[in-house]
Image 1 (tube, helix red, strand yellow):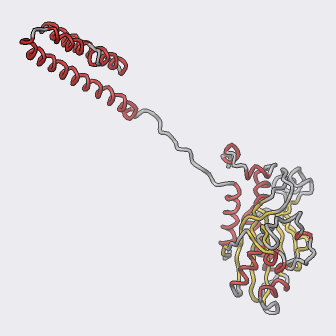
Image 2 (cartoon, helix red, strand yellow):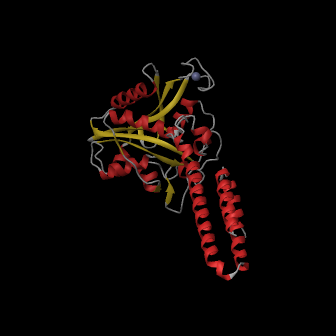
Length: 335
Ligand SMILES: [Zn+2]
């Protein structure tokens, strides 16, 4: 039986040496070390040898099992570390670039607008998106029967609370909290109860501006907004003011700029007229000052507002406003 033990030891060492991968090592373990393996078979055979030889043979068998197990463990550990080490050592592989996010096109436009006005001395203010009738309409000189108060145009949450339809209520809140002079822009989300289509959505973003002080005139309004147009759209941009009506300003104007696609000749973007409407503005109505407790004999001011989506649509030639809100990476990765 000693010969058998020696033969099995040599055979095991040879086989282990030849086992090249983890599946070969597993086959080795089953063949030699498992409960019905070759070493276990010899332990079974031990029962049929004479009792006086058993202690010595048993010791040899135990030695065999221990040394084969130790050798096997060594090989297994070496194979595992080989598998783990291989990729870390391949210094020729190119690096992996982690996917990076980008700023939303609306955020980019807003950041640029902010940068221009902050450089001209404007602060930035914000206010709640859930408003009441007083801040959204009443204090802004909307008459009680104004159509904007209709349920069809405004999302009412209950009798008194509504989702703001413009950022103008922030003007009221700023003026109620701060005595003049006031010079701020107010960016934010606004909501309108509109049928959703490629051209309109139930929510969009506005930036409004307000400047109130002693002796602020329409010339200040023009100077500030023309400076904005030159910085934001380019110094060659032409502009024109056309009279219009807003409840909260008097006089009021819409500002148009020369179409930056056709330069004024007429194209699809400007609907062949050569001009694009980009913002509304005007001198703050004395009734608004009265509502917030400002002395309208002493103070004057101007206000203006523009839509962020409209600017981004025009700039990038996007023909569907809904793309801004779908968070489709195929769209967002283009900016
Ligand atoms: Zn055009």
